[in-house]
Picture 1: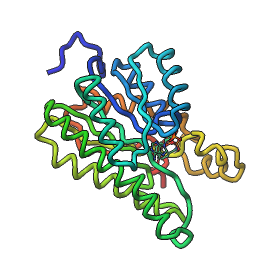
Picture 2: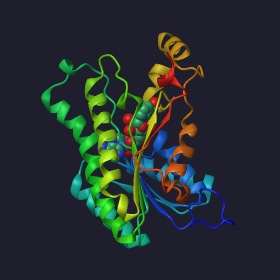
Picture 3: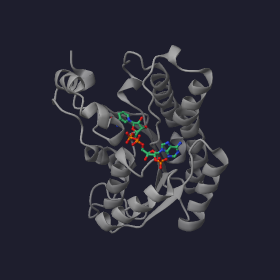
Length: 259
Ligand SMILES: NC(=O)c1ccc[n+]([C@@H]2O[C@H](COP(=O)([O-])OP(=O)(O)OC[C@H]3O[C@@H](n4cnc5c(N)ncnc54)[C@H](OP(=O)(O)O)[C@@H]3O)[C@@H](O)[C@H]2O)c1
């Protein structure tokens, strides 16, 4: 039961780990979770980038923000990071599995090793991190697993099969964990962004042909602004979303519902 005097979606007392949060959508979700009151740990591989992000997040939110640099595909390093979070904060309530390496090429342009590497980062790493986090959340009787999938988790793009396969896998994984952990106080949900003007997409944002494509395909008629993703994470992480489980929250300006 949520107390009526408490603001909606408040996250005071909650501890969140957001992977790949030194920039882009991960950074924006970390900022939104911190603004809602959560203590936030951001991850990435580049310690310098993370340090700069911690400084600006602390300045912008006045929340408790820390960084842990590790490659999400390095399982022992991920396990050690989760243990360090529990040692430091005593709990982990929210895992936002945000890292997703982007490689737009047709399948026959990949080497077998490149296929395995992309799947290792985009699907296997979030699965193993979720497994470790769920064990902690089960002991607490509370947890929120949030996966970053993509609209390519439900519609396909030409020449983009490996990333599409990984994101389809992430969506399936999220649903499977929603079923497995539902009686343990843990929910599992996903966010499916459409096209966002992040640094990764900077070359497409400035491409005139691609801008025309965005204008035609996205009913709202523009790229998503990175800060437009944060509220989705706050909602799924909140106590108010306690009966939302196994859901994909699409944030795409209507792209996937247009005829
Ligand atoms: N942008 C979009 O339009 C869009 C659309 C649909 C879905 N998505 C999904 O949303 C998520 C975020 O996208 P984004 O464009 O914001 O991401 P991004 O800017 O490409 O990456 C965010 C951060 O992830 C970190 N990172 C990359 N590989 C890592 C690894 N192996 N271990 C730890 N950190 C790693 C990078 O930091 P370091 O260099 O410090 O490691 C980077 O700062 C992804 O899952 C993506 O697939 C994005």
